[in-house]
Image 1 (cartoon, helix red, strand yellow):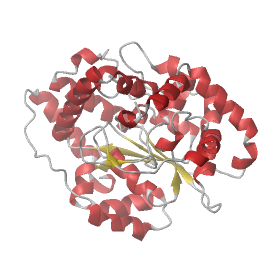
Image 2 (cartoon, helix red, strand yellow; image 1 turned 120 degrees about the horizontal axis):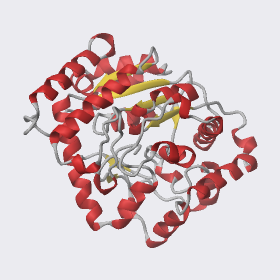
Image 3 (spheres, rainbow, N blue to C red; image 1 turned 60 degrees about the horizontal axis):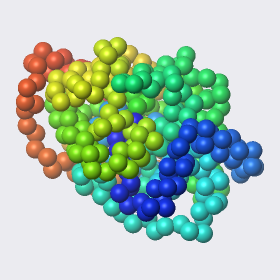
Image 4 (cartoon, rainbow, N blue to C red; image 1 turned 60 degrees about the vertical axis):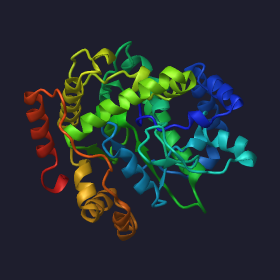
Length: 363
């Protein structure tokens, strides 16, 4: 589910597609390569740390990609990029195999049609492959996904995740400079307790957006990807392989409140409105002193203030440099409009929750 559906599947050659099918033919492929790599390349990541990672989450379309890219640009973090595909759990091995044939990182608009551009060097939410590889049976159902609590995290997965973070730091390190891990995974809004159990010193940013504009955007993107998946089977498979269950033919809602959600409900704006309420209520109940809500609207309207706060909470080395990105933040081009067919009771509940979660210093 991870990140919404930022992908470059439409630019892959026939050989690329065959390789991806091979890599994701069975979870054991990714896992076996990752474990073999851990032995072969142990020296390369031995000095790397998994300390103080930053996790960016929230429902898709809440500004998670924007925040990820701003933080990644600081040069203080490592994460997955498109160059790690398709052998996501073996980044050192794959980097060594592809070093001589690296492609240029040409920018291309991502599949959302929202003007954001990506390249092979862009950060992306491929972390979900790790969750799927080790915990799939615990949270992936036929019609929906279950939240992952701390009690569902095995010691095996904890060790594998920590090791993977250290490997990524080794892959992306420049001149031996230490790097912290940064994650953008939308599904982690349902796993805050699990993330904090694996990485007790992690900082978690939960991106939140005005419910009317957010719900409209979610519904629109779902319909957009339904159309895409009707005409491009590889794109549908690609997104399923990497756990992008957010939209389209692969959509499996996260059942935050045990309502038995299914994709069949996604044509109703009130489904998305209730989904929004349940998602952020779930996150709010599990928030502690290291979990912070980031308002999309506050970031757009007062970018300098918002970025200074994020820089402080992230413990960035160059806080002033990060805050300078405020000049490049622009408001979306889409106009605000009412949410047609919205249940007024649900709308009032969502607006009240948004006001509460974006109040004060944690706005």
